[in-house]
Length: 345
Image (tube, rainbow, N blue to C red):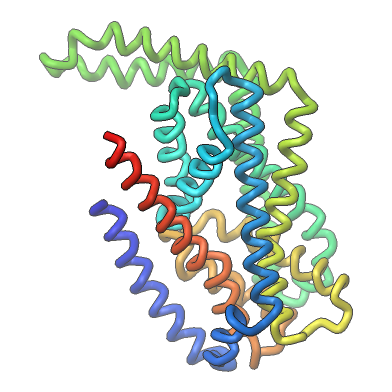
């Protein structure tokens, strides 16, 4: 809880500074437009619906994956809770990395062994990230005429894409290689053996090493079951694509709230392409919730497409829709989940 409060405090400070820069160095922020976007503009409602579609697809990914590789009864509601927990802690953690740890803990508390919990969480990440990279690859090709107008945008686009592809390849190769898995086991055991200095923990080292081997076997078995069923993997990848597109569409909802595009189909393609590329860069922000970098990245990338007088307001609308609203909703749901668990205990 202390760490969450620190993240929220840091987020508040960075958001206030970002808001100041948006108000000062852009065309200003039209607060009435921001308010109307969520309460009186059809594109705001479409954006919220798109956000819910993205969450629904994410829940289905978890539900189908666990259903196919475990014998544990895991309801659709629990799958939704797992997705929401991941969203909440990803929004608070640097580089959106904290959600996986809490998702693993949630799966463990609901009957899955540690190895299976890790494999489910990791494979969800690999498939979802692969879907985003897939869209970014097409987006990069489509958006070359746009991003080439700004040398900085072009370099950032290329760098983010290469890093994202490289990260996925490393994870995939590590899972495919038995030598890599054996190396990971040896590394974990080496760290466990360092506990020999503790009189209390030293007697437990043999049991801990056995547990590591068992959990890695569970992990490997889960990977094997999924990799053998390509139909399931294909379905999950399609759901991940839908989820990614729905999330990217939030940017178009914010942009089109000003009626910028007369040719809406072409406008959707351009905005989704730019946003997919920008997401590759934003993923690696070291700040909680990508605060500061997300707004700056959106502002920089879309400055090639949106008139300056609208840019500050559109950036704020997008950030509220894609970050602050999901953070608020997922935080409320996570609080409810935590309170329900306390009541049951």
